[in-house]
Length: 200
Image: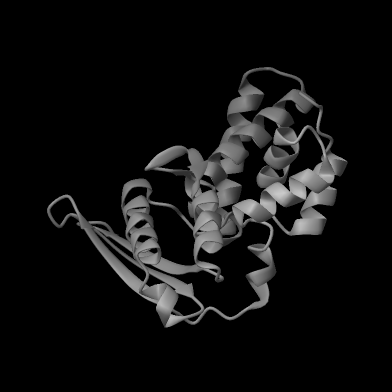
């Protein structure tokens, strides 16, 4: 297998607007051939998904999901560009699956940037304290902390989480697949999760 460089991945991303991992996979599948990788991404519908980012998504659904005999409830707003797409089976299934994902995993935000800074700083402080107690040198401590923070975001940010119905992909991959399928911008706008007896 050809060794794929970061520069190649960046170039393909710049030319297609596809996600970094999608670009890396396409280059690996095509042995590093840039033009073939572009064609592959276009066939998959991923090359155009990010180009839709500038369009307005104001249609969609507010999906409800109740779990555990009424002990956990989720409301999530997911937007797309047209009412036609919002009524499609693929979009409706996506909305249901995302509501189930939120019920099961209790994310702290949709993206890492949505997670409150005080929570991030508290987690980092705990990881630093644990790593320092191991007696490892400072540069190793920093690497340990960064690794744990990466894991924290993967567990706490909805789009970074493993998709519960197919753990080989992230929620953001599932979102990109829907964008490619329906040909519209899709945004997970906001959510709220209620758990019986817990404060919001």
